[in-house]
Amino acid sequence: MIILDGKKVSNDIKNEIAAEVEKMKANGEKVPHLAAIIVGDDGASLTYVGSKVKACERVGFESTLVKMAHTTSELELLKKIKELNEDDNIDGFIVQLPLPPQIDTQKVLLTVDPSKDVDGFHPENFGKMALDMSTFIPATPFGILELLQRYEVDTKGKHTVVIGRSHIVGRPMSILMSRKGWPGNSTVTLTHSNTKNIAQITTQADIIISALGVPNFLKAEMVKDDAVIIDVGITRVEDESHPKGYVITGDVDFENVSKKASFITPVPGGVGPMTIAMLLKNTLLAREQRK
Ligand code: GUN
Image (cartoon, rainbow, N blue to C red):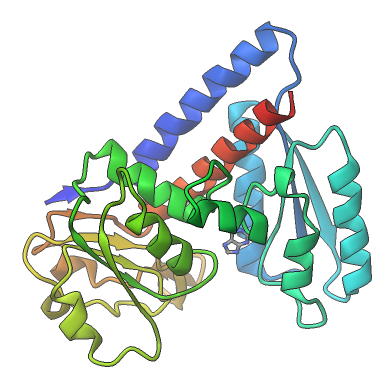
């Protein structure tokens, strides 16, 4: 069994990006600038956005954090997005999700300039991804592809089962794994909350990508021997014995599933750190395209 070490790989990627930034600086070029908008004060979202800003510092990017109150109106947020669209100093930006209920998320995502949409959530970019055109690939799926590639995991002709159909992970992942090329060329089954007999499907899988958000959902008896297991779950589970009062728990019963797997991602330290590294990669790409 091989652990897909997202912490190590994401560090390698950050070092590669930092080297690119050094070259830009040496040539007197502008360094990439990522902005993030966060609406409200959800603890988990603030932590994620904070990590993104810290990662920018680590690789030498400029970053801007725009904090808006949870009472922000849709119009106010759209105005802020248009400002960032027009700000020549900003190469790419993200709007942290989820948004408060008074704001229509789809309208927000449609307002982001596709050339600055480093999350890859705009329909134009999502469509390009589905049509094999060059574009921003959403960071979490992009990170999973990168992990599979760096560990030389064979995906061609394999049966990949994706659990969860979210717009951020499951849906794009199912498209990417079915695309031509590598990592891809898989036969994909996309399962979700209405799927019947899910264990019957997962036991047929060569590769399982679980993005459900249910702690310890995937048990050893749902997995065949030598399967590749990618755990995208990052649920906070209350735990008084832990200093923070919670532990981050994945979708996979790691202790038992890892005994059967050929490759497996841990939580934490698997897919999570990859997401941030790939957001940086998309931001670097956005800067290069704006030259
Ligand atoms: N919320 C959970 N994941 C993500 C992500 O990748 N990007 C943004 N903007 N919000 C998120």
